[in-house]
Image (cartoon, rainbow, N blue to C red; front, side, top):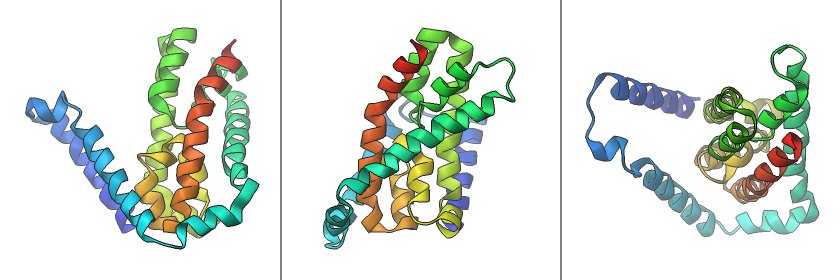
Length: 199
């Protein structure tokens, strides 16, 4: 929980810094955050490579490893369809398209904006960002209440990048390979699902 609060505080400080201070160009206009993310993933990779038990999880999982990304897709689409009942201005089809973003906010929001307009694209962007932030903050609680694969499911496509460090910390290094695999499968699935649903 302490780690989640630290992440939240850093996020809030970043928002305030961006709003109230004139930051140097390299902090706002460059790919600095992207390189920091690359560094984080690199160090997670070192942790995975240094732990001999990590790859044994993949061997034990076999075909079952596909259950997690499949369950994430089914759960996300079913959840979005269910929520659409309470949103009179959003059709079930559009809600499912938003849900099929699976946390991949940059790509899915662009697709949806092009196919359905800026309003729906913005909703897709915000809902997928909220999914990522929820995972970053709630990962310890998800593990405690639902098990060590819960943050992987909650993260969706971001399990392969931005949420991977927090998943590794809370679920354990042995689950980082499963998170990476799930994230890759879901990332590949996003453009296919969004296009299929909207066309």
